[in-house]
Image 1 (cartoon, rainbow, N blue to C red):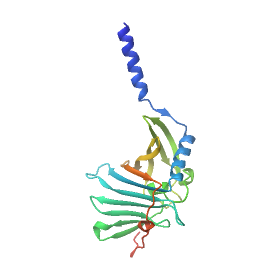
Image 2 (image 1 turned 30 degrees about the horizontal axis):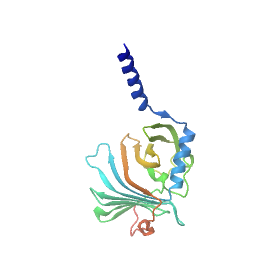
Image 3 (image 1 turned 60 degrees about the vertical axis):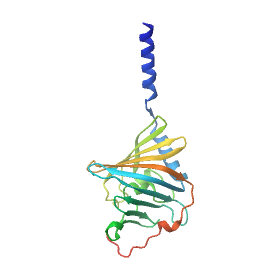
Image 4 (image 1 turned 90 degrees about the vertical axis):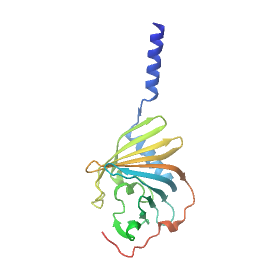
Amino acid sequence: MLRTIGLMVALVAAASLGRAEEMKAAEAARLVEGYFNSTKTMQAAFSQHTTGEAFTQEGMFYLSRTGSNPGKFLWDYQTPDKQRLIATGTALYFVDDANGGRVTELPIKAGLARLFAGKRLTLAKEGLQVERAAREDGKLKVDLRVIGNLGGDDTSGVRRVVLVFDEAPMQLREARVTDAVDAVTVMTFDNVQTGIALDDKMFRFVPRLKQI
C-alpha cells in the first residue's frame, strides 16, 4: 500500500514538472516588447524549414537598431542557395544571389519583419495580439495572432506567429510563422549574441533594378 502511494506521488510530481504555467497576455506582451526594444544588435545562426519543402535553409541573421535608420536586419542564407533578405532601415529587399542577384523589393514590414523594423516595437501598433502565453521548462512561448495588415502593405499572408524564448536570460530561440494556407515555417536560432558591434555596411544595399 505504501509503495503504491509513493508511486502515485512520484507520478504526480513528475507530471507537475512539465506543466505549463499560463501567463496573462499583457505581461507576455510587455516581455516580448521589452526584449526586442532592449536588443540593439543581434547575431545568430539560423535554420529554417517550411512544411512541404524537402530542404532546410541555413545561414546567419544580423539585426541592428542603432544609427539614424534603426530597424536594419540581414537574413544571409547560405544553403542550399545563396540568398539575402536585407532591411536597410528604409526599404526591404530580397536578393537571389543564386540566380544572378535578382532583386525583389518587399513591403518593409512584410511578415516577420514587423518585429524588427523601426526603432521600437509595440505589438498592437504592428497588428499583433497575444492570444496565449505560457512558461514551461525554462522557456517562454508566446502565440501572436495577426489582427492587422498594416494598411494593406503586407501581402505575405502571415496570420500567426509563435515565439519561443529562453528565460534566464531571455533570448529568442525559435519563431514559427503560419500563413494563409496553413503552411508553417519554423526558424530556430543558435549561438545568439546580443549587444555586439556590427559593421553597418552589411545593411547597405542599392538595387540596380527594382522589381515588385
